Image (cartoon, rainbow, N blue to C red):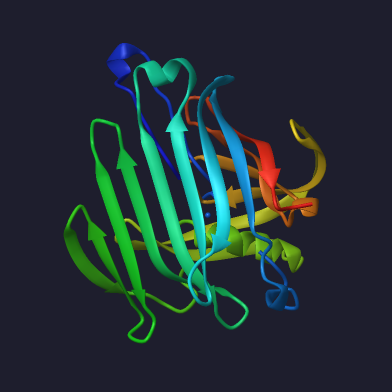
Amino acid sequence: MIRCQLSARRGVVWCAWLVFMALLPSLSTAAVAEELPLFSAKYDLLRYGITVGESRLALSRGEGDTFIYESRSRTRGVISLFLKDRIKERSEWRYEEHSIQPLRYLYLHSGGKKERRVQLSFDWVRQRVINDINGDAWQMPVEANTQDKLGYQLMMMRDLMQGKKEMEYVVADGGKLKVFSFAVDGTEPIETEIGRYETVRLVRRGGKRETTVWCASRLSYLPVRLYQKEKNGGLRKMVITSVRGLP
């Protein structure tokens, strides 16, 4: 999840995030051979009904048998007069035994008060990941099927295409292995700027905030809307505004 925050003393706080989701971050076993369709999508990020930023997602081919999944987020609107935060996430991965296997993950936060660079390198022969945060490196063991913070989003799409109702992902995040759990909470038609979609509604279990994600079946279960409810009752939203490469 992507966060940017302005000093509370100014009375302005914003959060720009990308999900997915927790947030987040594909296809059925039979569809693995067909691979995920390459795509790009754009989202508006809102807080209290005001647009505070935008995020762009893109899935493309890398070198050899690898793929690149990338997220770019920035402030927008009035908030951009005070904050110039830009966040880039990049996951390089490959298909492995009908799954997604992360190879390298990069997180860059620039333009804010605190610059941050995080890089994860996965060594699957030794089943470990090397973490490098602002030049401070260490390693930790990882279990099979561990994902990075972007790759699990694609795994979620894949599992929905398989018809799964409950999903759990082990994610390497912040030098720890975290478990992200989701469950299908029904279906719902959703109106968006780019059309009306039948969606599967997911809820995240055990997160710090109440998170709901709507994934469109016609778009290979790409999320078209995400809501996060804060403890103080505030609501953060991520809504799709454009998509390419998907029906």
